[in-house]
Length: 109
Image 1 (cartoon, rainbow, N blue to C red):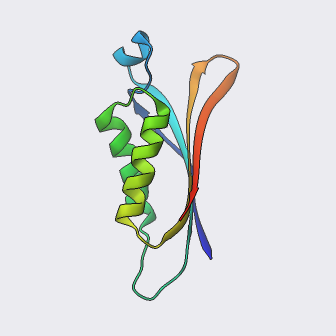
Image 2: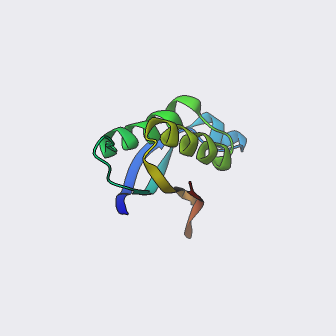
């Protein structure tokens, strides 16, 4: 199995359920690990994976990070059926002053 790593994908988005989080963008850092089998007719475009993560988070303005993880992982699997395992971590590094807060979803198909 081959693995694609997308590390430190950083962008701004509205995400969170607290009132102040709904009024402003905040920095989000995404980490993604994709396991796949190299087959002659399959191709995983890591630039498209990155674009999908950013655009879904920016356009949908999720309340819960967990909801974002559910929808994004499902969309990635649909777009790239060759994916055999997927780990997506979303971090909000500026929400607390003394740490990075992250939520991760890992799934094997």
